Length: 141
Image (cartoon, rainbow, N blue to C red; front, side):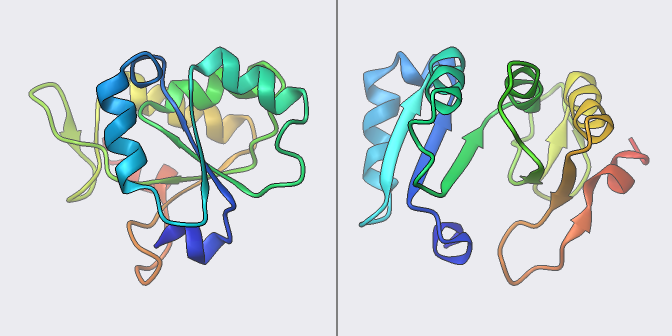
């Protein structure tokens, strides 16, 4: 759904754990929309590939599990200007920000750091939902 809305030609899953798991990669490959390229990369390999210009001719839709990954990528020279926060699952350690977004303090810190770095941080689960300013939602945390 999102890939069509944003016109993505590649989905890039950036997660060290997933990148090293054949089972996890197989599951993601099954869920990939037809006609869209897929990369499942470690954080460092993603940074290297992006900074080397490997995807300059593509529109890349990046998926990460933890916002700290995005902060790290920016600090390593990857230009990220906007982040949409999607589903973040509930655990015993998380606090609900919305029905679908649950965070721990480290996530809050990373989102606030993204904001300080000039990144627009929004929350919109599906394209038909209203766009919410996620930093404002975090102020309730």
